[in-house]
Structures are given as C-alpha cells and as structure tokens.
Length: 285
Image (cartoon, rainbow, N blue to C red; front, side, top):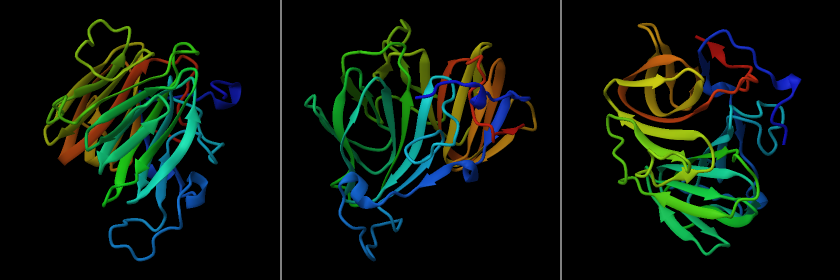
C-alpha cells in the first residue's frame, strides 16, 4: 500500500477544498464477486439495479488511480446495499475499520465470535490487527442499507483483533456534534464507545441549526455531507455541499456549518499531514 510518493503529493492554495460527488469513483461490482446470487429483477424494494453501489473517496479495489489517503484516513466508501445481499466472508489485517450506518440495518459476523445487527446512526468498529475474517451487509433487511465505511491506518501493526459498537441512541447528534470515534490514548474520551488506535476523532450531526467547529492549527478534517445540503466556511461566503459531496479542511479554522433544512454530516478530524495528502481534483474555496 503506497502511503506517500512524489506522484501523489497534493499542493493546496486554500484551507477549504471541496470534493464534488461527480469526482468520486462509482463502483457497481457483479454480485458473484462477494458470494451473492443474481440481481433481483423488478423487485420494488430495490432502489438500484445492482446489488451494490459504492462511492470511493480514495483508491480502493478496481479504483487504483485515485488519491491514496487523507492523512491517516485511508478509505472512505459510501455503500448502498440492496435487500438480502451482503459482502461475503473476507479477510482484513492491520487496519482500524469504522462503519457508520446511515439507513437500514447492517449485520456483521466475524471469526472472533462477534455477531450484531445495527440501525441508523450506529457506529461499528473493528481493529483488524493480526488478522480477522468477517461478513457484513443486508442479508435480512427488507429495504436498502446505506453505510459509510472508513479505514484508518493504525499507529502500529500487529495489534490484537478487537470489535465494538455504539447504537444511534448512545450519543445525541440532533443539532449538535456528537463525538462518535476517539483515540484509545485520549484520556478525555472515556464516554466514547468507539475507540481506535490512532490520533483521530469522528463526529456526526443531524442538524437544522447552524453549527460551529474549531479546527486547531496542525489539524485537518474530512467532512462528508451524508444527507441534505450545507454551506461550510470561515466567513460569510462559504462552500456549498450537497448529498455525497465532501470537503477537505486544514486548520487553523473557525468553521460555520449552515444547513439548508435538515442536514446529516460525518467528519473525521486528525493530525495534519505535512506531506500534502488529499485529492488533486478538490476545488479550492
């Protein structure tokens, strides 16, 4: 896995850089790749013809020409899985995997004996460490499942595999930022159920009110507009985001998030990457 080279260095002119959704790679793999039967024909419960539609923010699977990461955020995949379909059992290692459920029900099962189904607003994490096998998806659901899966590079390899989760009611994200992910080493995060082995924080909000967020010097963040629309900025102008758009943010910034109606946001905040990781095709504000 290439984490940095001179060919993926990303110079930037702005502290706020929009990633429009048309710039994301859209993957719709054949069902047999993950152990599924043929796509359902004329099923009214399906919202897409193919069993899976993924939007990749960084290089992943067949998308090899995209950006490699944003700081320690190696993967962000926005997945839509149709009813009675799933990712069959597959391996992972040396990665912190965080899954945020947007809609529907996500079912997880792994070789460590963990099995769980989680609904909207829930967060699941898996420290793959020395190696783990798992399956995930929508095997029993009667409606489409949407989730955002993010992979975070751990501070060291060879960790013991671990699994955990938080439900959508464990943290109030209505009209405020809810801290849904924190570093295991953070002494201020004892109330955060999802902990990873890296200096990173995850926040979610569903809001119809303006929110503020202060991004400190030496920190950076990647924010996804999950649902709705919002203007993000440190001045009156701002950058407009709609569903599936994202934005790269580089501190120091005192940010204002001004929603248009109710907006759903997911943001990962982390130490700044002096090497300039990010998307070359992001638009300077």
